[in-house]
Length: 255
Ligand code: PEP
Image 1: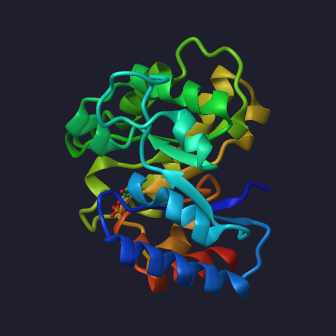
Image 2: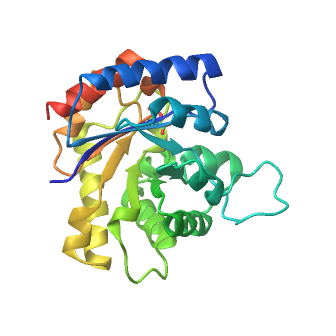
């Protein structure tokens, strides 16, 4: 049985005081929450990572970064390397979020480079893919997903599925309040799993965790998680509030 991931992507939100208060609260929630199946991941801004690791030390709470550089080091003003993240014992890193693709022009081949750097350091990549509204309306969802997967995994002939998670995030559902219906999400998740089976093998495909992202919240997470190929959520807005994040963790535990 695959784990269920409840992953929060905070983007550029919260003050340091708000960050610390959230994690102190989450640590306290976890004193009475014990689950072998749920993986809690929160990805705050880079600048809070060190303090956050200090607050969550010794707990099951996993901390992720929202991005990383594909470069090892050097004259890349403003960038953060994978080695720096490793130095803070960061366990996960989001790559290829649609906002990075849209505002920072990230491509599938750049996403592969970042994934390989993360893999080399033992940090699990949360690899985001998803179609825009125009692409969905033009009936191009599956071809867009396929192109993204082909680009990201191009030339990778063997795969270790413990080194990444996939997050299917239809761009039209991110931050818009519109959620893909469980049926819409499931058919894409199944398509993704089948793609891995065709390209690699069934064992690899069955081991890959595929998260859904796009306006997930306490009121819709249960039905999304009830789909056979949905293994958790990558959650923006609703992960910012401790009550709503822990509610989603508790709902997932009941699945
Ligand atoms: C996201 O940031 O990846 C996301 C899915 O955001 P939201 O849950 O707010 O739609």
